[in-house]
Image 1 (cartoon, one colour):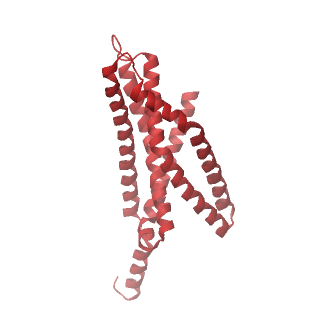
Image 2 (tube, one colour):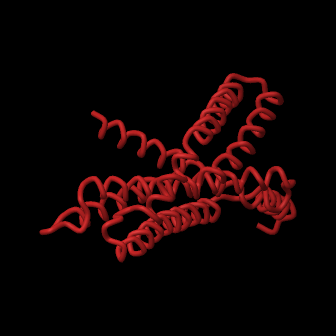
Image 3 (tube, one colour):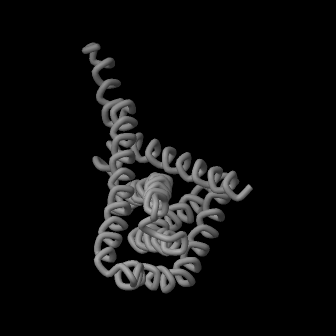
Length: 220
Protein backbone atom coordinates (compact mmCIF):
# COMPACT_ATOMS: atom_id res chain seq x y z
CA UNK A 1 0.00 0.00 0.00
CA UNK A 2 2.82 2.40 0.88
CA UNK A 3 4.56 1.59 -2.40
CA UNK A 4 1.37 2.34 -4.37
CA UNK A 5 1.01 5.63 -2.52
CA UNK A 6 4.63 6.51 -3.29
CA UNK A 7 4.18 5.67 -6.98
CA UNK A 8 1.00 7.75 -7.08
CA UNK A 9 2.73 10.75 -5.49
CA UNK A 10 5.66 10.47 -7.89
CA UNK A 11 3.29 10.23 -10.86
CA UNK A 12 1.42 13.32 -9.64
CA UNK A 13 4.73 15.14 -9.22
CA UNK A 14 5.77 14.30 -12.76
CA UNK A 15 2.37 15.35 -14.12
CA UNK A 16 2.56 18.72 -12.35
CA UNK A 17 6.13 19.23 -13.58
CA UNK A 18 5.06 18.41 -17.12
CA UNK A 19 2.19 20.89 -16.89
CA UNK A 20 4.60 23.54 -15.59
CA UNK A 21 6.82 22.94 -18.64
CA UNK A 22 3.82 23.38 -20.92
CA UNK A 23 2.75 26.60 -19.18
CA UNK A 24 6.29 27.98 -19.27
CA UNK A 25 6.85 26.94 -22.89
CA UNK A 26 3.71 28.53 -24.33
CA UNK A 27 4.35 31.74 -22.37
CA UNK A 28 8.10 32.03 -22.90
CA UNK A 29 8.21 34.17 -26.05
CA UNK A 30 5.70 36.73 -24.87
CA UNK A 31 7.04 37.00 -21.34
CA UNK A 32 10.64 37.38 -22.47
CA UNK A 33 9.63 39.96 -25.07
CA UNK A 34 7.07 42.01 -23.14
CA UNK A 35 7.00 40.80 -19.53
CA UNK A 36 8.31 42.71 -16.53
CA UNK A 37 10.79 41.34 -14.00
CA UNK A 38 8.02 39.76 -11.92
CA UNK A 39 6.59 37.91 -14.91
CA UNK A 40 10.04 36.58 -15.77
CA UNK A 41 10.55 35.54 -12.15
CA UNK A 42 7.33 33.51 -12.31
CA UNK A 43 8.52 31.90 -15.52
CA UNK A 44 11.83 30.80 -14.01
CA UNK A 45 10.05 29.70 -10.85
CA UNK A 46 8.04 27.27 -12.95
CA UNK A 47 11.28 25.98 -14.45
CA UNK A 48 12.77 25.40 -10.99
CA UNK A 49 9.68 23.56 -9.77
CA UNK A 50 9.76 21.33 -12.85
CA UNK A 51 13.45 20.49 -12.46
CA UNK A 52 12.90 19.44 -8.85
CA UNK A 53 9.78 17.47 -9.71
CA UNK A 54 11.45 15.50 -12.49
CA UNK A 55 14.61 14.88 -10.47
CA UNK A 56 12.75 13.19 -7.62
CA UNK A 57 11.78 9.89 -9.32
CA UNK A 58 15.17 9.77 -11.05
CA UNK A 59 16.88 10.16 -7.68
CA UNK A 60 14.81 7.31 -6.24
CA UNK A 61 15.74 4.96 -9.07
CA UNK A 62 19.45 5.82 -8.86
CA UNK A 63 19.59 5.67 -5.07
CA UNK A 64 17.70 2.40 -4.70
CA UNK A 65 19.75 0.89 -7.51
CA UNK A 66 23.03 1.91 -5.88
CA UNK A 67 22.00 0.58 -2.47
CA UNK A 68 20.76 -2.68 -3.99
CA UNK A 69 24.14 -3.23 -5.62
CA UNK A 70 26.14 -2.22 -2.54
CA UNK A 71 24.14 -4.44 -0.15
CA UNK A 72 24.27 -7.52 -2.39
CA UNK A 73 27.17 -9.83 -3.08
CA UNK A 74 29.15 -12.17 -0.89
CA UNK A 75 30.14 -10.48 1.28
CA UNK A 76 28.14 -7.27 0.68
CA UNK A 77 30.04 -3.99 0.63
CA UNK A 78 27.39 -2.47 2.91
CA UNK A 79 25.22 -4.00 5.59
CA UNK A 80 21.49 -3.26 5.43
CA UNK A 81 21.84 -0.67 8.20
CA UNK A 82 24.75 0.99 6.42
CA UNK A 83 22.72 0.94 3.22
CA UNK A 84 19.87 2.69 5.02
CA UNK A 85 22.27 5.36 6.30
CA UNK A 86 23.68 5.80 2.82
CA UNK A 87 20.17 6.17 1.39
CA UNK A 88 19.27 8.75 4.05
CA UNK A 89 22.42 10.67 3.19
CA UNK A 90 21.57 10.75 -0.52
CA UNK A 91 18.01 11.97 0.04
CA UNK A 92 19.18 14.55 2.60
CA UNK A 93 21.85 15.87 0.23
CA UNK A 94 19.25 16.24 -2.54
CA UNK A 95 16.80 17.86 -0.10
CA UNK A 96 19.33 20.47 0.98
CA UNK A 97 20.16 21.18 -2.67
CA UNK A 98 16.54 21.83 -3.67
CA UNK A 99 14.62 23.06 -0.62
CA UNK A 100 15.72 26.71 -0.74
CA UNK A 101 15.15 27.10 -4.52
CA UNK A 102 11.76 25.42 -4.00
CA UNK A 103 10.84 27.83 -1.21
CA UNK A 104 11.99 30.87 -3.19
CA UNK A 105 10.22 29.91 -6.40
CA UNK A 106 7.15 28.82 -4.43
CA UNK A 107 7.00 32.23 -2.76
CA UNK A 108 6.98 33.94 -6.17
CA UNK A 109 4.29 31.60 -7.49
CA UNK A 110 2.22 32.13 -4.33
CA UNK A 111 2.42 35.93 -4.69
CA UNK A 112 1.42 35.65 -8.35
CA UNK A 113 -1.59 33.47 -7.48
CA UNK A 114 -2.73 35.99 -4.86
CA UNK A 115 -2.53 38.79 -7.41
CA UNK A 116 -4.46 36.72 -9.95
CA UNK A 117 -7.14 35.88 -7.37
CA UNK A 118 -7.54 39.55 -6.46
CA UNK A 119 -7.78 40.61 -10.10
CA UNK A 120 -10.08 37.85 -11.40
CA UNK A 121 -12.06 36.98 -8.26
CA UNK A 122 -13.37 33.72 -9.70
CA UNK A 123 -13.46 30.24 -8.16
CA UNK A 124 -10.51 28.85 -10.11
CA UNK A 125 -8.10 31.66 -9.23
CA UNK A 126 -9.19 31.76 -5.59
CA UNK A 127 -8.87 27.97 -5.26
CA UNK A 128 -5.41 28.11 -6.83
CA UNK A 129 -4.34 30.85 -4.43
CA UNK A 130 -5.68 28.83 -1.51
CA UNK A 131 -3.80 25.71 -2.57
CA UNK A 132 -0.57 27.66 -3.15
CA UNK A 133 -0.94 29.24 0.29
CA UNK A 134 -1.27 25.82 1.89
CA UNK A 135 1.65 24.42 -0.13
CA UNK A 136 3.95 27.33 0.73
CA UNK A 137 3.16 27.15 4.45
CA UNK A 138 3.55 23.36 4.42
CA UNK A 139 6.90 23.50 2.61
CA UNK A 140 8.19 26.22 4.94
CA UNK A 141 7.20 24.30 8.09
CA UNK A 142 8.63 21.11 6.61
CA UNK A 143 11.93 22.87 5.93
CA UNK A 144 12.00 24.26 9.48
CA UNK A 145 11.47 20.78 10.90
CA UNK A 146 13.76 18.77 8.63
CA UNK A 147 16.67 20.92 7.48
CA UNK A 148 18.56 20.27 10.70
CA UNK A 149 18.10 16.52 10.41
CA UNK A 150 19.13 16.64 6.76
CA UNK A 151 22.37 18.39 7.69
CA UNK A 152 23.02 15.69 10.29
CA UNK A 153 22.44 12.91 7.75
CA UNK A 154 24.75 14.55 5.24
CA UNK A 155 27.34 15.01 7.98
CA UNK A 156 27.14 11.31 8.80
CA UNK A 157 27.48 10.47 5.13
CA UNK A 158 30.65 12.50 4.72
CA UNK A 159 32.25 11.79 8.09
CA UNK A 160 30.62 8.86 9.88
CA UNK A 161 29.19 6.34 7.44
CA UNK A 162 31.10 3.08 7.53
CA UNK A 163 33.41 4.13 10.32
CA UNK A 164 35.01 0.69 10.07
CA UNK A 165 35.85 1.29 6.39
CA UNK A 166 37.74 4.58 6.41
CA UNK A 167 38.90 4.17 2.82
CA UNK A 168 35.29 3.76 1.71
CA UNK A 169 34.01 7.03 3.21
CA UNK A 170 35.27 9.23 0.42
CA UNK A 171 34.05 6.82 -2.24
CA UNK A 172 30.55 6.64 -0.77
CA UNK A 173 30.33 10.40 -0.33
CA UNK A 174 31.49 10.91 -3.91
CA UNK A 175 28.96 8.34 -5.16
CA UNK A 176 26.16 10.08 -3.27
CA UNK A 177 27.19 13.42 -4.76
CA UNK A 178 27.25 11.93 -8.27
CA UNK A 179 23.77 10.43 -7.81
CA UNK A 180 22.31 13.76 -6.66
CA UNK A 181 24.01 15.71 -9.46
CA UNK A 182 22.88 13.20 -12.09
CA UNK A 183 19.28 13.40 -10.86
CA UNK A 184 19.29 17.21 -10.95
CA UNK A 185 21.01 17.39 -14.34
CA UNK A 186 18.49 14.91 -15.74
CA UNK A 187 15.70 17.09 -14.33
CA UNK A 188 17.21 20.14 -16.05
CA UNK A 189 17.53 18.32 -19.38
CA UNK A 190 13.95 17.00 -19.29
CA UNK A 191 12.57 20.39 -18.25
CA UNK A 192 14.29 22.42 -20.96
CA UNK A 193 13.57 19.79 -23.61
CA UNK A 194 9.85 20.05 -22.85
CA UNK A 195 9.93 23.85 -22.53
CA UNK A 196 11.67 24.19 -25.90
CA UNK A 197 9.20 21.75 -27.47
CA UNK A 198 6.14 23.67 -26.29
CA UNK A 199 7.81 26.99 -27.09
CA UNK A 200 8.45 25.87 -30.68
CA UNK A 201 4.89 24.59 -31.16
CA UNK A 202 3.19 27.69 -29.75
CA UNK A 203 2.70 31.09 -31.34
CA UNK A 204 3.40 34.26 -29.43
CA UNK A 205 1.03 37.19 -29.50
CA UNK A 206 3.66 39.21 -31.37
CA UNK A 207 3.89 36.56 -34.08
CA UNK A 208 0.11 36.30 -34.28
CA UNK A 209 -0.18 40.08 -34.52
CA UNK A 210 2.44 40.17 -37.29
CA UNK A 211 0.61 37.52 -39.29
CA UNK A 212 -2.67 39.38 -38.83
CA UNK A 213 -1.11 42.58 -40.17
CA UNK A 214 0.36 40.70 -43.13
CA UNK A 215 -3.02 39.21 -44.03
CA UNK A 216 -4.72 42.60 -43.78
CA UNK A 217 -2.14 44.09 -46.11
CA UNK A 218 -2.50 41.24 -48.56
CA UNK A 219 0.92 39.67 -47.96
CA UNK A 220 -0.50 36.23 -47.11
